[in-house]
Image 1 (cartoon, rainbow over the protein chains, first blue to last red):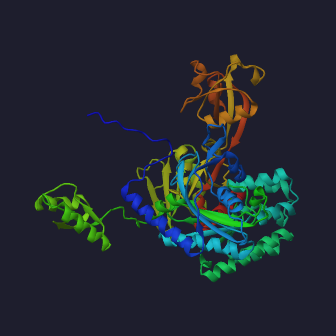
Image 2: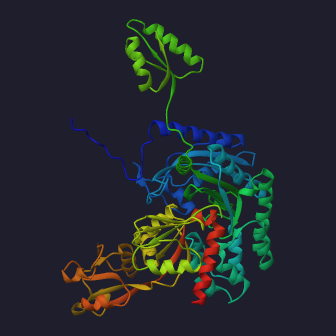
Image 3: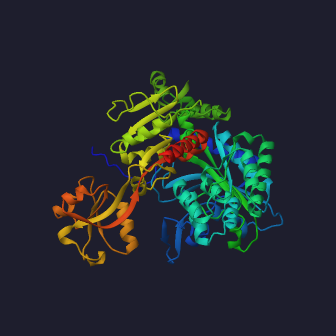
Length: 388
Length: 214
């Protein structure tokens, strides 16, 4: 027989039984943590009017028309849809809203480790709260959910867009120059950053020095003090103060030792207005989670509402766990119930009773002898046999 | 210093210079040579591992975190567009990406070429260059001996790397435009840059000092 293989599109994959079982368990653990922290899970459509995704600066890669010629897009980001839901559908007296999600996203990209064109994110958004308490909450929640998923070692790189903006203001940069600096940070290009530093600040000034080492401004709390002493600008000091406050709360949660300040951190999206963070693990060369404060996004929906949140990549977490050797893809059921000719009714009753006891049961689909049944237990991945 | 740091080195013309430079800051290993049959060469005392890779693969190893850091030409980085940290300009291995035509067919302006077929090992860089000029081209990716393109009628122009220009002259090609100048770079994986920051930033600073002293 000539077997026909049906291909699937670039950047997609099937998740087969063992992997799916493990994956579901991990997803559940993460969502459980979100719920424990008081977040409501929501689901938004996989595709929406394409305009909504412009808010997050990156237009969707998968776009199509509906029958009325409306331009639709597969979602490439969850923050804008969740913000839309919070703004349009959940208007009530309670100004603080905690929402979470587990969703597939679609981006056309070069396939990287744990990142296909279709990939899954779990995340939270906390609306209606400015200030360090909300920021610390989402950072610690990201850490707690990683831990719940089984990840042990990680570093939370914590930065602040207000620090970068403040530096730019202090140096009197034009909008074009600011864009250049941010793009350079986003690309992690220290060589270009050095060239830019030479062109925008006075040689030998502390400002030039800070721009030059911007990508290397990583370290513990003392780094914040060092920078506060070195720089004069109000905005810079405010950002550093904000980070100090957030850090002391993270410490109170017991996660202080996971934090490393990273003041040159600028995530690919442009909408952040305050702290931002990324989480890195030794097992995988890419960040597994990231987020930050985005107080201006709700402007798009006519609301003045601060917001903060994060998202984590499920595939990358799974890849990291796999590399830790922490995953077991084997599947097992408790009981194989087989039956001899004419005994199906008794077998159904037996299977039902066992399931009610909480055991997983596979019921044979045709009659067989005890010998045949014994031989089929292991091919059915069952631990024991009940023969009726 | 309990963890290894893995360094990806490119085979070919950058290899010796990269090894020499790293040795000056104590990053070296016994039998570290390009012809080594071993793919991974370790210095256990200093907790360093070297992997020797084909030039264009170095950024890939680093992007995925298979190597923490690497040394690679900016020309390769510009072409490959990988998500990595570019730490330091190492100044050596200077070369230029340029556009050349057969001497006999040289025209005054680029726009004067009615039909542009461009042979190159750097299709992304070439496309970007012509796109910015608003010139439409047909780009033909070759993997070596790019100069052959115009000689055998495969293309009208070539976009290629030159160091001295000897190969161009020998093949009666003449440079009509320079696209960019490239030197080698120290690069790092984004996660390693955070997780092994102390070691990587110290290495960067040490190399910067060595380069300043010449």
